[in-house]
Amino acid sequence: MPTTSTVVHKQDIERLEDQLGQLIRIIANMNERINYLETIKTNPFLIPSK
Image 1 (tube, rainbow, N blue to C red):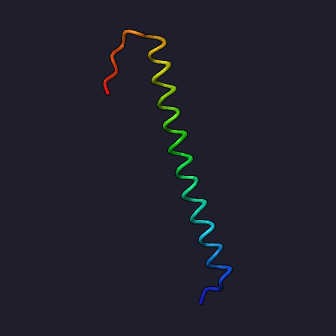
Image 2: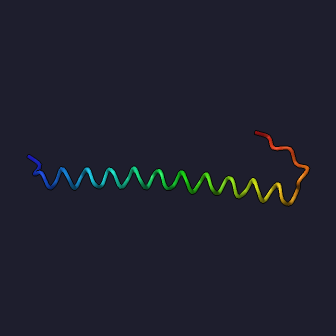
Image 3: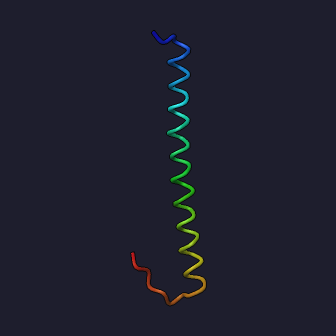
């Protein structure tokens, strides 16, 4: 039977994994925006496909 500290530790790890996933999504989104801005800067007449 897991102890209370083991359960709390597991919850902390799950929360950290969730936060890390959110951070990765934020970074990926920022990278996508930077790529978009760099593309528009180098070719301002480009019409985005989205």
